[in-house]
Length: 225
Image (tube, rainbow, N blue to C red; front, side, top):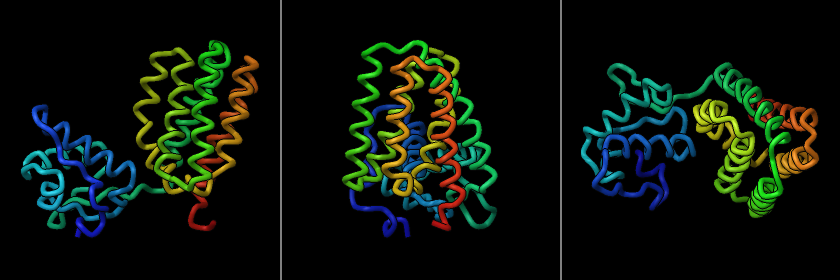
């Protein structure tokens, strides 16, 4: 049962007014992305509606949209289930991420000033502390914020838009390996900051490619670690 899967208070009641179907969609997508709703988990409309404090109709509409986008599988005569990503899906997504992030790192090295560097250092310190505290949720959120900041410093709007399209799926794949990546991930972030600060575009690309490849490799080997 869903109620046995989610911690008390994990699902906030949705506030009105507003486009309810969109708010339900965003709430469910966040629960899937953070793996509060696990891959393969059966999603019962009535239970979800009860947790969110809404009727079943916006939940049904949200599940249909999530199915179209590949987050949920609707199975005839069985119902809705959180999609279980294949290794190939993860590999394709994380490979595309490497291309986007490497270019962002290069542009950030070319364009960043002292304020941008300071922002990256602050996020890195926060991430290091979250690892020390074994706070996986904060580690994942801070990792996403760090990469988003690099993308912002790159100054390319189109690149940022493309990155935003894959951001949630990147978090989805990163969450189960965040603890395994641990301190090493933030060591690599420090190396990236050094390259950006030195305005060394080539080094920034090299570090970012290595960093994203380590995450991809860790994801594929997560069951063997």
